[in-house]
Length: 377
Figure 1 (cartoon, rainbow, N blue to C red):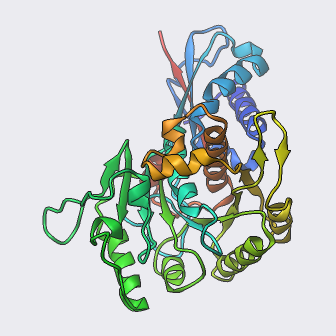
Figure 2: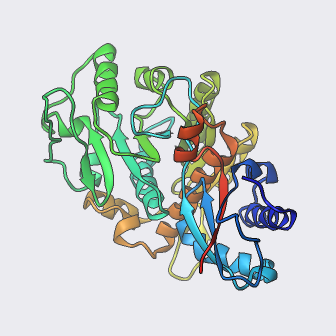
């Protein structure tokens, strides 16, 4: 399909405004993705039309702000109605995608006790609240904690054929864990090969629904599980969790180095226990300050978010109700949502899309931004 010059110019203007709003490079807004429905008539500002903007990243909480921004910046389109939808692309990985899973994101930490599992769970629900279809896999074979944080430690996945299983659904998020398959009172005393085999079974023998993102909560460290997930699973990218403490950032550095050696993109760092904020509003930094920023600069990445030292995060995790769902309007939840938006945006705009057929590309959203102009009477 072809546009008249005026229509093409207006479409390009919309693309540029979206790129500016989300501070992404213009090339990430691919004009080749533009499709015009109702192109038999001229694209005129005074005509009642709906402009459909399909984004390759999920940013539902900022959609209204984007619409207002577009209307302010594009005064000549004031009579047009904008609609926003999300079509997350499949990012390129070393292996073919897991059926129904577009992107697999590993959440890792160099050491235990830094809030990695709480970050994984809240990131999953934050992405869902931003408009994505999300799943979470607990890859900590020896110490699964996701079932407790989801409030269903006694649940078990169903199976139709005794070979594959359905994930547990928790408020719209698909989840699976070795904790759903093994008695919580029994220790998983397995050698490395057994643990890695169990992990692969959890990933490939779970009948995942269509997911934009599968969050994988890795165990702490850089062991067999990490090598398996990096080399035998189509991992899209990784997020590193740490605290500002020197010993924690030193271990996090090893984790980043591992992913770099395995050519897995690191989207950024989440800093937990970054500061303590008293009721008076004053912030203190009991675990030092600036460690994650320095680490991010060393590895040419960014700090995705800094979370406070808060009892609320722990309390809701222990109660099986993640803070993002229990207190969605809280300051901590807003930080998690900001992290989720950054993760989604970086996957869509910095990672190479998977090489698909033309039909699949159209269906799965190969490009970051796709704009459709729909004439309506």
